[in-house]
Length: 351
Ligand SMILES: [Zn+2]
Image (cartoon, rainbow, N blue to C red; front, side, top):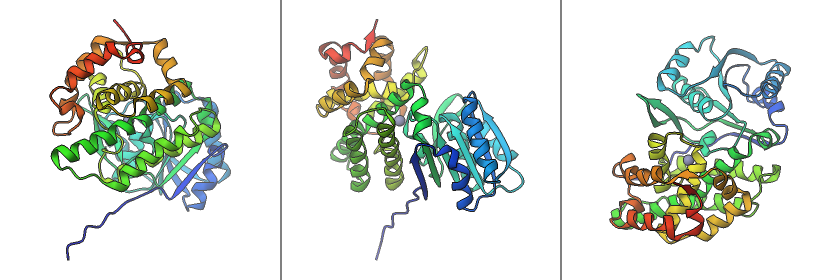
């Protein structure tokens, strides 16, 4: 009999609560880790670093290397991998995207458990099976392992700039359009949809929509929802449950823009835009953005319209063969029409 077995790795330790950072040494110790390597984001506030350092020293955990991560180039990850010595038993990363991506990839190469400690919730990368690294100047999503531990201190995340949390909201909203694109691909190309992954992804965004705030309890749900999304990607072995046409537009913007903005801010606006073209979920998305203040931050600093039109044109080439609404022949013209006919969308752009 031919059986297909789903092999999934999910985080074993999950702590999402106020004060979690100060307890990170206790968590590592409980998991039997006495010797670790730390990666931190460059420029992380010193009180966060001090909190982690004292948490580790209180638990008498030896740190064999402490790396300050500035870039997210593949070659840097390889250099860090080469520098790992004295047999650590775990890799810990604290901070934002680049440090987490580099550390996740180094842990994957070393076959060591990875503990992810995001200090802001700007996207779903803190708990996903991919590492986003630059190779020859281009951002690539490389296969890596899911974190073994996820430690989110909601008090620390609440102190991060609001734009970062709103970026997380934008990245979460993308699940609406990503799932829609995935189902469209099933109907047009026969690409199988993993029902459980789609359900998990859908459920995660709806759970946050029930408490669309960015206070500590809202951030608790945002962290949980973004984490569930990472797990949905792991369940189906692809980025389909989290990334569709809206992500292709954002990836294109990263290459075209004079000044690319936060991933989730670009993705959020692209999500609303694509939902109009898909003809579904636009009201739910715009209500979520109104409740959280997402629209306000966008409209205070609008995007240049011409860059977005170029990005729309370029988007399908960002991932050849990846079927989305933008693969359909008339979709781009419809999208351009919405730039003027939809009031909210028109307010997101300047000349
Ligand atoms: Zn994303």
